[in-house]
Image 1 (cartoon, rainbow, N blue to C red):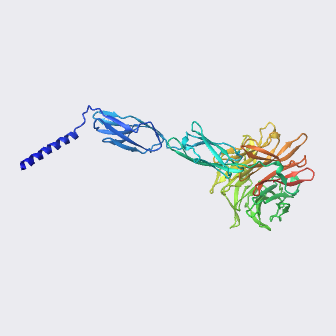
Image 2 (image 1 turned 90 degrees about the horizontal axis):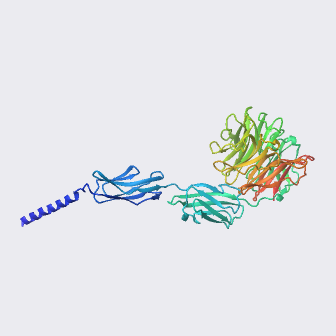
Length: 602
């Protein structure tokens, strides 16, 4: 029995040894291997790929997976490999190579296009922050690559606004690169916001974005303007007034006030709804004052800034003894907030408020070239503090007459003009970022050989500043018709021209623009312009609005006045919940003297 068991053990051992020798037996060197790589191409993807390498016909000595000319992985047998797509976007080739002795066997080549970049917006219309857009305008968006048609739905393209019947119908061009959105049901005025959420390209890279534009209400009618009361004030002779002798302020509560020069003194009057009432005299010696500025606090009380200087009140000289004075009405009397500047000569104040905090921009000089600066009032210390450094583009620049605006976030922007040694001048803009003044683009000038000045600045609900200014073209063939008005709007990265020349081409000197922007982002602009008739020339006040990407002239506000008259220095504001356009100007009918006029759209 033991003998049989021993023999059985020997037989089993021999069988196992034979089997082991069979597994380890190498593939003959002349064998032909077949190598395949899947998935097969071409493939376009934005994510990784799980490759499978298969070798049949024998056992390879080694197997390599290649990405272009570089080894990506090594295997001993058929295997899978997850490529993580960590490379940059581009076109790649994958293949597997098996080695057997001196021979190699290649798989099929898999072409892969890696695209992890989402579609980009190349252009859009209307632009973000556009104002004066037509209610039925079609929105268009041009993309950097084709958009997957199935991703364009009523939920991925939406339009919002206050209009109750608002509707948007998106459609995609045949090449997938242009999206058009037909808009209906807009009740003007309205601010529309187009939102793209989840639009994707062919491999699933998605795009989300949104932007807004404004549709204005019905254009204001010239016939709707009515004079607020009779003659508000007799200002004296025109030669005593100097530059910018009036300023108007209005607020959402309907308050309207004016600050003006009369007999070389600053006066303030308020409109009661039926008559004008004078406030008490300002607390500072006003025997030689000029350039008044007025703004309204949240309680409706006014703040006034002005240039207080000796000698000629009509001058804006930078070297005469002068200071910037500020006073705040407390309901019954003026609080003297003292001079803004210290020992330097100062002029040309521009006043603005943010949440009742006072800001004043002005230029000052020690007798050399003036600098533009901004100061804020610190109520705790009852003192004025400089906001950042000087704004000039260069230390030796001659920077003059700033205009200041503060947006709804409290960010101040200042426009001013700088004179050059060749007699030209340019308009520049800077914005305070919380730490320092940052330039917004380059000079705004339209012409090259021009003297640009007389700036006005405003910021609408989109917080993008708009600047209007005057240019005198020294190279004009007709020097009498060389004064023109232009405007540009900041789009977040550069200045966009709002049309071309705004004033009447056939008229003469257009000067001193004044800007206002309402809650619907409608831009209103007034200026004075010399209008020729057959026998004489008048200075008149012209009002225009930016609508549907062009300037719509509303008309001549002083048209009802005597034929022979001179109107100057308009100042614009928006009053009441309806934001009624309100304009003040001075007028000389050449018979009864210079008067202050105020008109408001009903």
